[in-house]
Length: 578
Image (tube, rainbow, N blue to C red):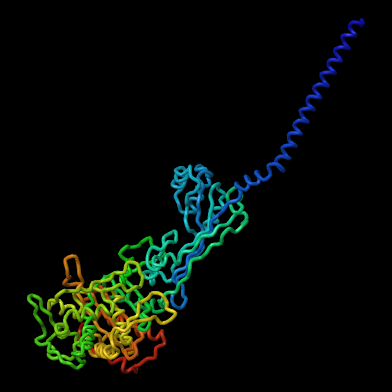
């Protein structure tokens, strides 16, 4: 090889060597730069931006959740629960995280009892939202089964569901809540603010499926609603409901009402209505059955007002129990209107007017006293006024006031026509007769101490009227109201029901109002049965037997000592119909 060729070869080798060195240096430099960049980024992430990145991570995994507060317990006077809140689960979805085409949705639809098509369409319709309910307030087992399917965007949370252990027996008193546990009827509505709790808040750690991994911090604890004890005695409520339901069924009646009061405190011990409903299952609810008829429905009290008219006569000083009233010929005419008795009784004492339930006799007393005297006593007993019980939908009733009373108005007022009351008002009026003349405020809440009342009638007058009511049961129209081994007093009433066209000729309300034991009354009970269709419709035939059964059982449950021998209890008088 020539010297020129050797030089060329040497030059090429030097060029190649230089290129290799340059490439190596370049690669090494790039590598070092990358490593330096990564190192700096690591330092930046771990030191410089650590707080910012931690916050961003927390935003994606740490959430603040609401803690539901359970609603207060409603109990009877002995602590038996009437309304409680039980923990349940609510299933919900985040449509932005859930694929409507996910094959697992078919299984989810079966679990929650929803059609697959409806579920997928619901997720499509609300694709832009982050929250929709799937099923509210289900059993924890159902929620657990749904979550175990592992479908993205499906979550659950704890809520509370209201449950009513006594069901339809106390439905009209306790009422119910909606799905958000807000009171809708009865005590639940009247004391909604008292029973409602205050939700709490907590910070939790969640995984990428939104499931809570850990509770991190309690921000504010939930405050449960306040509990409350009603005046109701659940034992008496059950027997009142049972007997009322039985009589409505036996007489094919339109409905019925029963109210029981403690005569010494004004507490409502039982309040039952027919028809009723089950607050735990309102799928077949008839709105007509929602009313607490004992408070919301008005009626003319009929002959149950006669003892109060007689009390007005005794209070006036013009009459005594033995004062005679001539009721012949058994009727009184006021123009085209005629008042009649069941028969011509002739001369009757005030006691016999109550025993025989004489319309003529009591109307003559009213004519002598005047309408204002009767009205004033009715008003003092609470007729035509709110009871103050605080129950939603209470009807006040009608107590007429006239600048000048017509004789027929005075007459009809004396035996309970031309005015209207609810069953609770009538029971309150009889409570005054039973306890010696003191009017106590009626209450659905348990009273820790005896309330303050005020005197309405003298003890002498109320004692005389109670003796007449005793005779009305022992000898008169209330013969079927005798409660077993206890002596009772009371008065029957039978009134025409009022329809769209006025009084209905063939439809009646059978009423009985009374007290027992009559020598030292403990309980007052009013029974009213609407439109019995069995052929019997008088208060003494339909309502009085209910009073007898309920009062007999109630007094035994309250450990009241029997007054009568068995032989005396079996000897009942037939009496007149009333």
